[in-house]
Length: 262
Image (cartoon, rainbow, N blue to C red):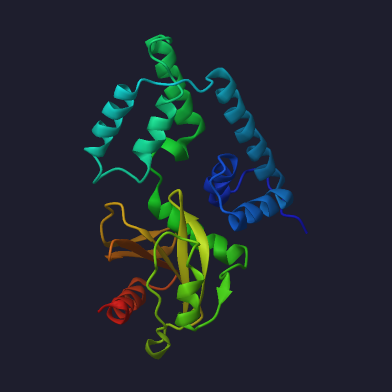
């Protein structure tokens, strides 16, 4: 039976934005399109997103901005690199590239940027990383799509990611410690294609999301009833999400770091 609701699904919002902007890989695009075919509210929201994007494109066609202006904006944003999210400078520069201050009044420039901030918040506003991580975990459970490669063999899972992500995620099997590896898949977190390693413990699923680090801090949190644990290894951010209690998730993190270390 098709899922019906009068509200778009919050956990699919970022992926719909990604599909509108052509940022998804083929697998994630296929999943979003399948969801839209089954959920009328999300399909309606997707149509509105496409229409808003088209209106903005029509109202503000691409124009060349002066290179000195672009460089000044990139330099100013680079100075805040430790606190900003990945790609923000480049995304704002792309918006600036639409505008020619010499030919447009300042009010038009400000209006265009304000509209862009409202219509494409995922493009220029820092995403809520915790919410993205939990949404990715929940999506994998709701869609019954935990893995793209289903195996406990770490030597099969690790090379599966070659060419699919721009980094090599650490992969270990912790079956001896009570956290067997189930497999891996691709996901979409914080505006980036992300490697997801899947483990189980006493009937619970642990999603371990791996992507390049961008100045995030190590730590633990609880959101919407799910525990999160974040740490860093070799320039990568690893984020474990599960409904396990915080102590068990901390044990998982400790065992993973021990097994993946030198």
